[in-house]
Length: 270
Ligand SMILES: C[S@@+](CC[C@H](N)C(=O)[O-])C[C@H]1O[C@@H](n2cnc3c(N)ncnc32)[C@H](O)[C@@H]1O
Image 1 (cartoon, protein in one colour):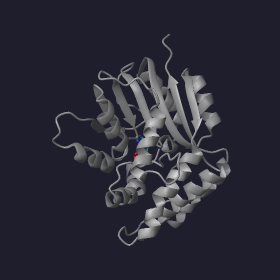
Image 2 (tube, protein in one colour):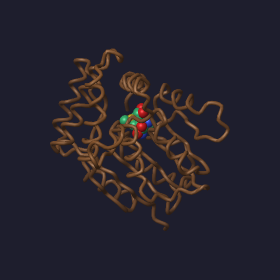
Image 3 (spheres, helix red, strand yellow):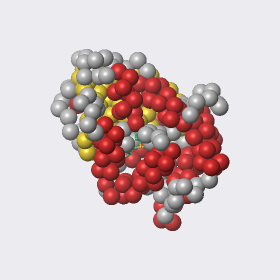
C-alpha cells in the first residue's frame, strides 16, 4: 500500500492544477462528442455514465471510495440529495480540501480519511458504492472488492470505474520512470478488465454492466489538456511531470495500451 505521504506527494500537482483551473474532479472525464463541453462537464459526465441507473433516492446511503477532493461526491449529493453520502479518501490533504468546500453548510456530504482496503463501515449498511479511477492505486484490489461485498446491503450496487491494461509488463517498467522524478503514476498496479471480471465472480458480485469508455476518456483528456498547452504552464509551476502523465494516459488510451472500464455490479439478495 502506498504511504499517505507518497500519495499526498503524487496528488499535490493535481491539487494545484485543479485549484488554478477551478476543477474539483481528479478523473479523465467522458466526452462522446468532440468539441462540446468543458473538462468539468466531461468529468461530471463520467460520473453519470458510471452511475447509470444506480438506485439513489432520498433515503439512499452512498459511499464514494477514493473520493479525491470531493468532486464526484459533491455532484452526486447535489443531484440526488441522498440520505447519506460519505466520501472516503486516503490522503489527508484531499480530505481537507473536500471538507473546506462544504464548510458551514448544514446539509452536506461528509468526508473521512480511510483506506479502501479496510472500509470504515458496518456490514450490509450501504446502498451504492461509487469508486472512480482510484482502485488502480490499491495494492490488494481483491481485499477492496471483498470489502465492497461486506458493506453493501443485499441488492446494493457497486459502481467501479478504473484504468486497466493487458500490457502489465509495460506498466511495471513504467513505474521505474518515477525514479527520475516525473511523478508518473507512483503506485499504480493496473489490472486487466478480465482480472476484474474474475474477481467479481469469485467475490459473488453479479455483473450488470461492463462498458469500455477508453475512446471517450481519451477524447475528454485531449480536450482537457488543450487549454493547458494553449495558455502555457507558467501559472502552475512544477507541473511538467503531471502533464507528461496525462499526455501519456491520453495516448495509451487512444492506442489501446490502456483501457478505461466501467463496471456496475449488484450484491445478490441471497
Ligand atoms: C484519480 S483520483 C480520483 C478521485 C475521485 N474519484 C475523482 O474522480 O475525482 C484517485 C484517488 O484515490 C485515492 N486513493 C488511493 N488509494 C486509496 C486508498 N487505499 N483508500 C482510499 N483512497 C485512495 C487517491 O488519494 C486519490 O484521491
